Length: 130
Image (cartoon, rainbow, N blue to C red; front, side, top):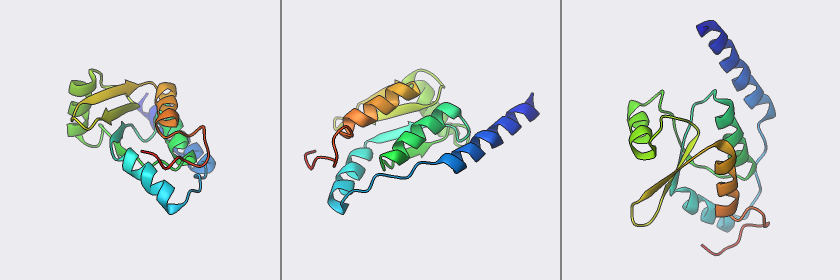
């Protein structure tokens, strides 16, 4: 079983490398706004998880650079995820607000929908309003 998981993980990583989307081009000012908003978000993910790859592709497609935290590589991230979010499940988006509170969002499709709405990605180019 371990060998099968290893092979599948390598296959997923190979597909991720082959089909990685290109990013959205923005002006430096618009990208700075996106980057500032992204600083409030963290993505808990595993490198070879297909659902995490789906979220990372959406991030790359829209040129969103989030902090990626891998609970397998850093046990502190695993503790944060299980204590804060309630589940040791990835992908999970941690959304920090100005008051220091965190909201935890699971499920890849919900994370992608949230990112598109949070960054106003249905409109091109990204609005200059915060």
